[in-house]
Length: 407
Image (cartoon, rainbow, N blue to C red; front, top):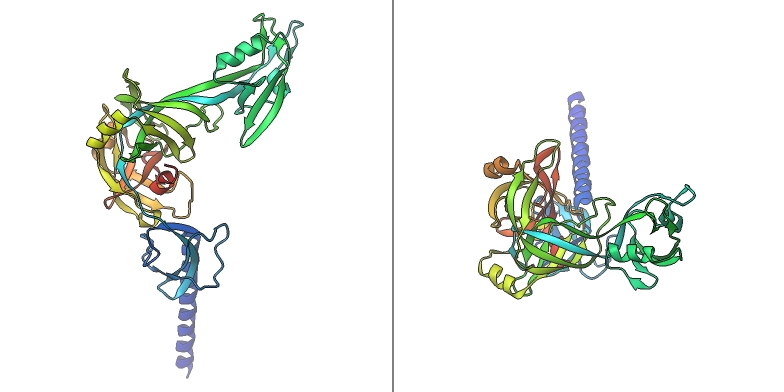
């Protein structure tokens, strides 16, 4: 009798532990599933890294997940088809077929207005120090768009208006985040320079090197970088007034090492631009190829269907990137982890370079490779965005669908 009770207790304990484990696992999956998934169909939907989950139509009375809308079909993911994990909205859309890039390009951007990159005191005629820009309420990172009703397009234009003010107040229209703010700037006369000053440093343009991720052979629209272009002083996203994409030849690579990020070094070609840059978004830089460049690139390109995030899994992959000249090559890599719930972030997955050629040449991922497309199982899954400074063989990648949604 004693042994019988002991067996019953042991069985109950094991059963309880099994239930706790199952529901704990269900909670883990729930936390790692997105609230919304894009797919060509909701039928037999799979999450590549979670084969234990099956999908079925959600009950009619199911409440959509918080923060979602009712544009798509509601489905329920269940563990082993028995334990409900999470209701997810499926937005039906066809995956585009895109031509992969991997080639470097030069970025020349003119800002929409001028960006305040720093504030400084001006020595007045009586020897006192003051900062007119700070007194006006200006902050580092602000975008000055108008001065006395005139649209600003250059640093020189603003400095000339201050110099010609004669001490008269300038009416400014300033963009800070998503808000437009009216300010009054009172220039002061500088004893040192002998002219009227505003007490600030501003920037109107930015240039650099990035990598093209993909383009649409029908429209010529292209995407690159996989992250926004930010001002080096303020960290703010640079608002684009106009821009050019120009050919670049990579001439050297500064190898990355633990604790020290490497970089691609190159020179802008003297030839004309091959496209215009139109938008600088959190998911990358976007533009349009001109007719000649589109014809040239289309004649020698590889096209892949885009993978939705749920199709991406840990394991082997490839990246297309350029470390010499202007012709991309394929290099082996692996996806270390995938964060399906990371939304619009540019850090959706972790990638590791495994190709000895790229490790020998660059030490792994270096600055300038941002935008290098990532291929897995014959599909375009994303682009490289950041390097791990502590381990340059590893870095982050963005989902291709995050970039394609802005294309």
